[in-house]
Length: 194
Length: 317
Ligand code: SF4
Ligand code: SF4
Image (cartoon, rainbow over all chains, first blue to last red; front, side, top):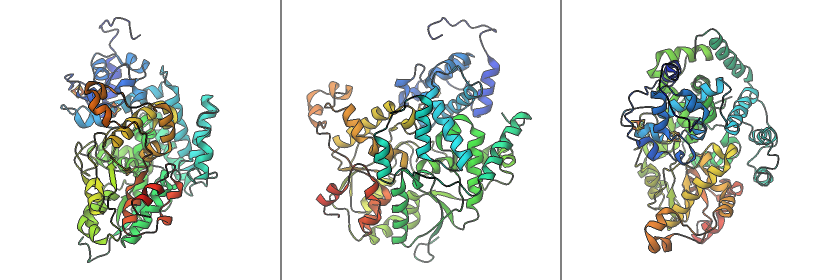
C-alpha cells in the first residue's frame, strides 16, 4: 500500500472516516499547513513510516486506510509534544487516539498487534481487578504474544525487590467498574456515543 | 492558604504503580509529607485511572474512569495530591476536556451514573512542595542539605504538556524541579534531555524502543556530569532504573551519535564512555533524605541501580 501511487477521487477519498476522526478527537485536520513542527519534535517519528505531519496530510486527502494500515499510530507514545508545539492548534495526540480507537473497533488491519495486545490486557485488568496487576499483565503478555521467555530474568529480580506483587486483591467496588464498562457498551449500541 | 497558619491537608491518589513497581515513590511520599507535617489521606477504593492504554483505545472509557476517581476523591477533604505524572495528567485532562465539552461530559456522567467532580483541585506533589508548602519553608526545613550532589532533573512528557492542561510549569523550559533541588542544597545540572520521552508505555510491547530512548537520556545526563537522575513519574523511573543494565548491554560502546560525529573529537572526549551507573531517585526520596528521614524508610532497597554507594560517597547516608 505504501508504494502504490495515490489517486485522489471520490472513490479513494474516504471523507466519512476523516469526519469520524475529527468528531472523536475534537480537532480539525484542515487547519494543518504542513510546517512539520510536530514531526520535528516527535520522539517516535524515527520508528514511524508516516511521521505525524504526514498522518495529518493523509487525513486531509481522505486516506484513512493508508494510515490504519501502517504502524505509525501504534508507535505514538502519547507524549503530547506535537499538540504542544503545533502553531495551528491541531491536537495531533488526540487524533492519534481517535485513529487507534477506530483501528481497535475494526480490529484492525493494524500489524502492530503487540501494542494492541498490551493495551487490551491492561484494560482487561481494570475490568477484572479495578487496578493493575503488573505480574499478571507481564505474564499474560508473554503467553499471548508467544514470547515465553521475554524479560524472564527481570521477573525474579523485581519480585525479590518487592516491585511485583505475587498476589492481588480485588478492589472492593469492582461492581462499579463493571457497571461503567457496561453502560459505555450500552451507549454505543444505542448510538449515543462514538 | 497561608502556610504556617493552617496545617495543609490533602486527599491522595497513589495510583497502581505506586502500590506495585513504584512502591518506593509511595513510601517516600508518605515519609516526606509526614516529615513536613502535611496531611495526606488516601482516597478509599480508588480505581486504576487507565493511564495511557485506556485513552489509546477508548477516550470515553478513559474519561469515565478518571471521572469516577474524581468523584471518589470528593469524599475526602482537601485538594487531591497526585505523585504519578501519568495519573496526574489523566485526571487533569479529564477535568479540562469535560469542562470544555458539554456533550462529552453528559456521556461520561451517564457512564458513571453521577456527576463528575470537575472542580476538585488536582495537584502534583511538585507544585504542593514548591508553591503551597513553599520553597523558602522547604529550605528552612532542611536538616541534611544534599551538598555536592549533582542531579539531572528529568521532567519527561506529561508533567507540563500540553500547556493548557497541567498548568504546572512552562511546557518547554520548566524549572520547578531544579528550584526544589536548590532548596534542598543539591546542585541541578544543565542538560539536554530533561524533557525527551523515555518510551513510557512501550516497556511491555516494544522494549527496544525504551532501550534506545532511555539510553539517550542516560548518556545526556552522564555527559552533563550528573551523579544521578531525579524523576517524578514511576514509568520514567522504571525505564531508567530497571533497564539500566540491559541498556548498557545493548549500547555499551562509547557514544558515537550524529552529535558526536558532527562536532568531532572534542565532544567525543566529553561523551562518557565510562558507562557509570546512574541511580534514579524519586523527588520525594531526595527531599525526605534532606529532611532527615532515615534512609531505611525510603524504599532504597527496592531500587535496582543501587544508590547507596553514591549517597555514602556524598556523606548522605
Ligand atoms: S505542527 Fe501542526 S501545522 Fe505543523 S505540520 Fe504538524 S499538525 Fe500541521
Ligand atoms: S504524541 Fe505521539 S505523535 Fe505526538 S509527538 Fe508524541 S509520540 Fe509523536
